[in-house]
Image 1 (spheres, rainbow, N blue to C red):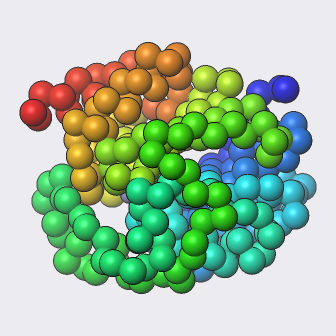
Image 2: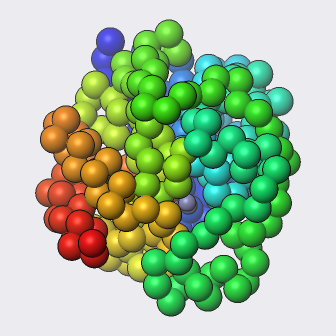
Length: 239
Ligand SMILES: [Zn+2]
Ligand SMILES: [Zn+2]
């Protein structure tokens, strides 16, 4: 299979909130669904690349925060594609319990107070529910790569690892300032919220050790492996 193309879809401008379209030999995979109501932005990105809803063969949701999972139910109806996500975040996808937010600094605390991140979204049950530690091959969806369980940002976070040594990690790491993006996008930061920094450090280090070279993320990015390795080291020092 040829290396897939990664297209960044701006859900908010300046890289503040991204989702990504992976255009592979045999089909497309949408990674994250953006905030509720993001379908127009996804539709425009598809059109720019000569694609339609029917070309999306799979929707991967990296974790249950509203800026990644909020549009999933609607995008599933529009594309007819199955939604893949991890069981660790299932109760949040189904909106059965309120999400837990561990702020990483003043911006996270302030952002939490705005209520934006707490907004409910249309609940859904993933069609493909990944189990603890599971690795799922994506070749049947037309893309040479796997989805791997990479807990840390949330218990059910997953990353999409491509054979081209590019990886889409959701919010395991961010870059830029505040929410992420805007400026200094070559500089790694912690996202505003993070459940378990040590698990995050381990997951990032494993991806670097596995030979991943370019990291795409929900806020800011992309980042080279050296910057990710240095960030994982800083997280480990938090103890
Ligand atoms: Zn998040
Ligand atoms: Zn996010």
